[in-house]
Image (cartoon, rainbow, N blue to C red; front, side, top):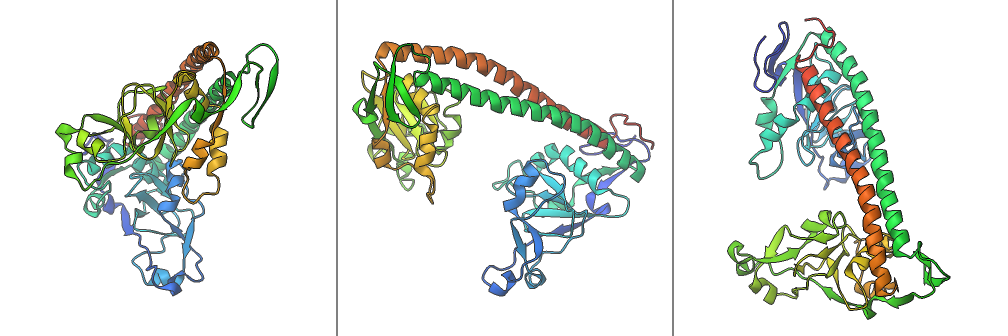
Length: 434
């Protein structure tokens, strides 16, 4: 056995060394956009960042490309037309994701491309790149820009068994990962169904679907009927609409770390909204001077925050006084409306309305006039309390099942990665010879 920098000991008869010993390194490029003739009669598949989603989705072979380039554009750039079997490695943005060219293609400069020499199978290198994710992460540590630089890419070390062993390893991993992938897909399908079920149950409860007694038309397309003793009112009649703001980034005194004590909800927090009923902390804080020198306001605990830009419709309740950026509509509930009930409406049955207000916009946002036009069903306060508690019980039951499925999915992904790593470095016996 011999030792390597990331792969450890390898079986006798296997080789290791610089990747350039086993594959030709090629880069990509973008023909000049200012030369129109480079972009006429474009018939050469050209893999760019616009196609990286294919790699992130786990596709082994590259599919159709979003763009193509012309022969003259290719000839006047540093890009190459690379042969089928070339293994691409994303070096920017989605760093470390990989795929194989099924046909001759070119790429942008966002990829390092490897043309296997004789004795190295494309499929084996593809699997090995997957096993090298920790190595790619290590190379990016400390970089201002997340990328794999040319020097680091050129000095990657890989391990290469004899070609028949490569084929047996690839066949083994194809069989084993197919089973794991099927298990992961079933769990993802279950998680999606549970998420949809949670939203449907919450939406039905929020609209009074379980309430006894006669019902009446509401005039709301997302809740056509409500209980006869409910009202349908403008949201502005039971909650005050507030807005946020971003203190000037050119004023250092607004952003001094030792003075920034005010929680400030920004787009950096939008991912955590809706997943939790309450938002307890924020990624960024602002200073009292920043608050005073901007149009942002300190809003009270219980304010319901609604994302109106970018990821529209996400919502949470402030667990303490906070301020927000201008990307949020902030609702301070009056004494006739429970914040938890409004949050329930926002995160369940009103999502379709948010989509209808943003369709077709160049910039996806909900404008202030539309915000002011919101109408909601308004049950008595006691009924609102019953609804939010019933929703919490149902949600807790489904959340537990969802978390179990998520854990199973995570463990399967970890097992898949460990299996690939062990197989391509000779740590497990897959029935191959030396």
